[in-house]
Image 1 (cartoon, rainbow, N blue to C red):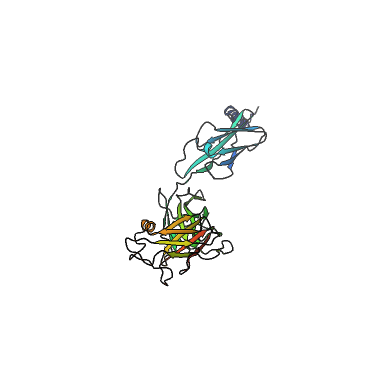
Image 2 (tube, one colour; image 1 turned 90 degrees about the vertical axis):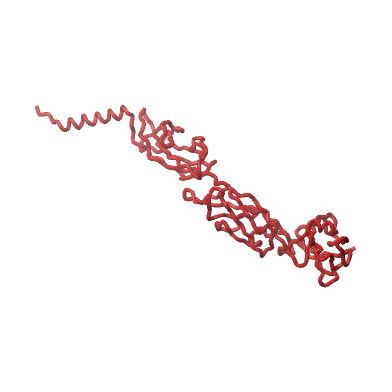
Length: 343
């Protein structure tokens, strides 16, 4: 009787292979996919483990080369869905550097058999970039003056930065980390007062995992903007203040008083005293009434040279060298030289 050897050997080999697979319980590996390649701390990523066939599976999710799964899910179909937080990806460890890459893989089991590991999917956990240091010069300016801003990272050199004024970005795209802006550019608010203060901050940006990631905000610096153009409809000023001095001249040991008066309806007023044509005041005072007085002693406390030459001319003089502005609810006006205060 003739025995066909080759078909018999093929059959025996097939039986042996199936037996080995049955013993090891190996099924064909699944596919793994993630909805995004990077997450920040506090965020989550969706992970899918999909078996090639079958229904009613149990899936296990692994980090890197770990032998123990950190999450398991069951499914009545052929696909398991996981939601993984950045903290779970990091295993509770502190993020080191700007980013940490984690490789995810999965296996599934059904009918007492398990698959081999899937392919790997990488997810990067992005950390917060450390806050930079902002320096500003000068901290007082007019609309047309240039203000120099420098944003420096404590961890290294940076090239692109956002500058923020009162929480809003000054430019639409990142600019150089050493930039110059005018007072008008820094003033993001349209409905501003005649004198305004803006709070400046900065952030540097880096490309991490294909994304433009800003750092934490820097320290804040307040800049005062003087003599701004005001919309008279929004901030009406009825008429200028009056100003007078108590003496036509004063010796070094003498005293003089400057009196400034706003319209009768004005109250809760901030007054600023100016010298010559200077745009920055050399003295500021707040009064609840519509009248204020500056004395020589008060002025000398702020600037010893306020009465340079030992005398001050009355405002009736065409060359009077002192004037004032009043400021209330955004209204501001420089005094008319030669106008006596209202009684």
